[in-house]
Image (tube, rainbow, N blue to C red; front, top):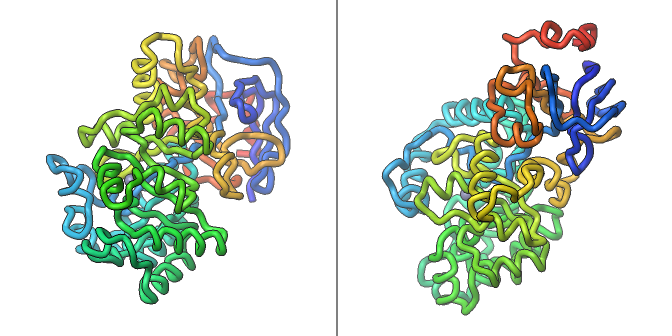
Length: 421
Ligand SMILES: [Zn+2]
């Protein structure tokens, strides 16, 4: 495997993402071997290469990336709900080869926008999970595959009565999904019975698999759950399913925010996708002041591009508006949502920060660009000004996922060790 060496760059070091001058950054055998840090560096005069952790997208549905903007003008139910929602009708028409090509192309786009991994809610049962696995193998992007049932295993009446658990056929399907996937996901708590949630929790625990669920995307999630079970969907998820990732929390009220805080829940916010559906924006400011661990996602590939730079910019500005001042939040708290906050999610091969001995999951940004080179706040500029065109190199475990071919690293940065490139 290639050895990389960068000299006199800036590195966002450790879990706090502190920018430091770095005289020597060495990547060998996929691991950061050496990181010789100098002074702290929040401003630049004439630019630099800036090395940050490779970003992780906390929530995607990349299977839907074959239908960009296809649900324009549709409601959430018309666009995205089983069995007759637009996405389910259209996905059924894709051949395997077509679909795989779309997914792989979008994973490559993620890599060129600085993302090395994503947590994906993958529809279409074990087949769907395998399709994403193949695309991930083709591109080198780490897809954390969270599979779901191809068809709901309960009738509307059974869900209303909330008594039966998963039958043998559904359990066999679940076993198939988990044999391919990293974990399980489902659209809402209202799609399965309480008994089924407990079965899934037990099985995933036995197999060491992840659990994820959309909660509180709109008030209907909570209302339906309350009507059927006497508990809101978030309360029910925490009690029965012990989710590793709760997605959305768009309409979380103060009691629910306290619940997320108390359990130190990993909450994935998707503000651009929420806005695109005309939903309220998540209470980002309140959640940032809680003990919940926040990640950012771009959600459905149909609704929103999987570009985390755009997501961070939007999130930061919405959060400022919600705080009601120009001071909060600190932009580093937004950057952590795509990087070092990941360390609290139980996934052993992803870390979200840079330190000697950790895998070389990193992105090199070209801060020689005119709009970046004289930054007066490097972190704020990453969050609000960096575009995909400013990404020079994306590595995962030292392997190149993306390298900008048009731009000569050596020419723009004479101190760079050209030998190793
Ligand atoms: Zn989603």
